[in-house]
Image (cartoon, rainbow, N blue to C red; front, top):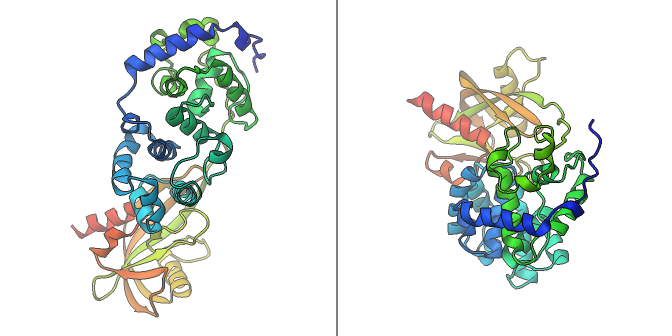
Length: 366
């Protein structure tokens, strides 16, 4: 690996860097709904939604979420299932559960006012160093670093930082750098400008250096190393899981749905009955009949396959064979096992993978 460049932050014209960056941001920033005002609650919601999710995907979700839960009080008092339904399709559902838990603490402990100190805000569930820094700087104008992947990429090039950004220990290096560079006059715009620069100009594979407002301050641009930075080790190979799922209908045209456990992947979301494929079985159908009988007390007839779907998580991939089926006997409905009508099913939050399953089923009906 290339030797770490000894160029230090002291050699940067900090005032010039701030001026060039802020001038560009104030002229070129995107028109995003959470920038309409600097309400701490709205900033918080947007930052949680934007984790692992593209801006253009988040915008309609943000509008709907704020319309449904416009204040800390509204979200704190909402039923969790309604919150998950509003989040349906965004993925990483623990974000929504943690957000609501933290908002309830803000409502009960701080009278509904989002805390404005690093210690208090960092104690809230799901609020890590980045989210804390983003809320404090954007909403309250406090010069705290908000270091995400975009910021690490930008600063690794500006300052020629060769530390592996995939290592948690590297975050401290970037946070320290931001503390030295940040504008104390306008920390809100400064942090947003670094993120915006990473999203629009200083992109991962094809940085637009000739359009960059701070290229005169960039070590990587002068050294021609912008395509080598940042240093990031590759993630582990994803695990493939083979599954079979069935949309099961009873004689009254009701559909059987199951609520996932309170802990773990896709916690508390609803799904269609599903089983991991075991090669010891002769067929998917035989395995599903056994699993559904044991797990749900349901005797079923598995019919034709309607299709296959693939759903990719950060650490694994689900490959699902999707079937139609008929319920012959169901011992009883429970809190986590329900028969619902075509109209009622719209009220339940499903993960994206099972939204795909439902679409396959509806398409097969014609």
